Image (cartoon, rainbow, N blue to C red; front, top):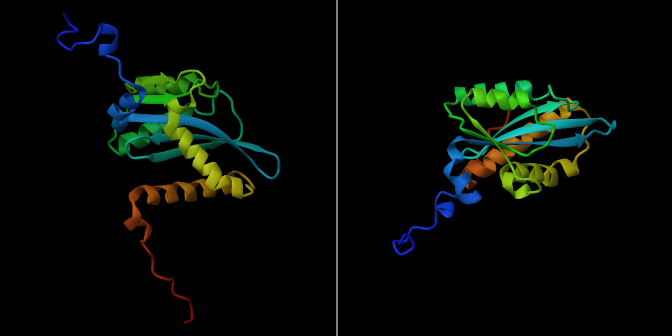
Length: 185
């Protein structure tokens, strides 16, 4: 009777595909991921990124080591930044990596957000963060030698600004600034 009326069985009725879920929650969803960068002095730096899906805005934290305390403050910082921008955070998406501190998830839950863990061995589930990391590596980090944490911060700042200009469209890419005046001229 239900099938004749065009109503699918109950198990399929409320199921969204992953693409539909991301599109439905893009305004309030933040994807998070870690990646590491090795310096020329054989130090490993860890970068924690948060990507807001609707704005494609990026927030990043750099750390020298991975331990449970490294992203405790990162969750609070992100919550404050999104609150200042007037963005309501409902869903935080990240993989099941042990580098993510449970305290950071607790901060998001206290703000009323739901923490969604991606399925095991499904890198496309966190495609927004993975794509930013991949393009950052391919277009920037694979071509540069990183000296230290400060140098990496400058590189990532330039990369995120370039990425924002690319997202803004071709008219934003043509914005030119006037030349600086020389002293004594």
